Image 1 (cartoon, rainbow, N blue to C red):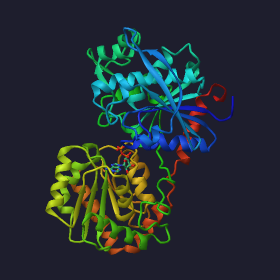
Image 2 (cartoon, protein in one colour):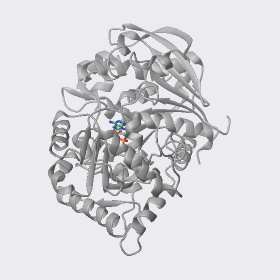
Image 3 (cartoon, rainbow, N blue to C red):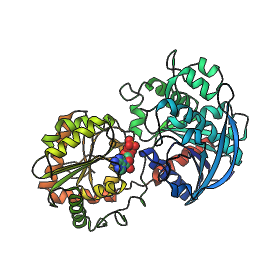
Image 4 (cartoon, rainbow, N blue to C red):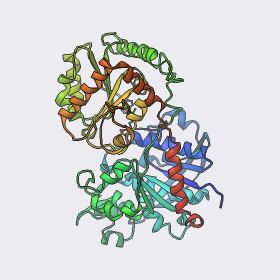
Length: 489
Ligand code: ADP
């Protein structure tokens, strides 16, 4: 066995091919970081119809076969298309019946069969390619059945020798459906449905629950979230299950790809900058942001950014409750996000009520996100829960001070500003209360306005903070090593 492990990543999205949130970023950045450390990594993904054509054009045909899936033994086509980028091999599973619809998700009823198929096909593809990994690293509910298949249908096959890790990026989404629906689409043996593997109650099954039971190790994306999900408030109904499996649960905080997010070389910025010219060039980016969004052009304004999916997870009820009080004549707010109609509507209303001072960009726009990270002074992330959170990491890397609630990865990555020692990375609050968010924004603005030297030092400290993948990648490597038979103590 080589000293470096072979890892197969299995997940439903991966930047730049397809991304709806942080999972896509991790599926991109972690394999690259592991490859730089010498590991061999393959990433197995669905070949979605909605993937941009320029990536489809780069794929190479690797073969195909038929795979049985359902309880009544229906067979489905599995095509393999491959691409290699920066040392990582990407194997896309082609099946137009499942993957030609959606963006990439459709709705649970269709998504359950789609990801039963995907979780099984991923293992079949590894056998077909005769590329047997040490560890199959699965991500979120869409890949949660892979550890189950590994120990059941694939137990006597070459890939059955691999161990499995299942990472929870967000426990809210679990793949719940009727037992009959899951039994039909997985074709898994009856005893798995007799025992409480998938079962939630007499009618309902849960794919994530089964995967967590079968995986050799469970990880989640911060230490705090690993603790939180064992409690009733954050456990999304699986807290007892996770507590039961706590011996194999580990929190490893995410990093960001520091090449993709580099303010010194970012081609999307009008004025690139490093820590030495951050004050001067951030002001230029701020003016460009204000010009582009129709805000009053004044680099002296305190610009608060929010880049987020607009869902209740992200603490938007708090923002909504104190929005008008947060504004003063020296403050501007820029929101970039899409999501629930009630939040989209609320932010549109604030924009129309405060033209020139508030801008609500209800869209997904990668390049505007870069300009906000570079041009804003502070970024709000007041989440109800946050497994890790990437926006606060990107903000710090771009010298934008995070204002966060102390939950999950936000707590683990943002040290609160200390008024005595003038240390820390941002401004934080603990309880989920609108008044505390308001107070925290006001405290941040006060330091910005009245103690700019300390603020500027915090900006530089944030830019110096190591938010790369390297430390986390090494923790994952240690985990993979602990699962390899001849490396175990
Ligand atoms: P989650 O995965 O819960 O959505 P994260 O903070 O882990 O949240 O990751 C969010 C990622 O998506 C970040 O890279 C962020 O910049 C990006 N993002 C979120 N909303 C938008 C948007 N409207 N336009 C561009 N990028 C966005």
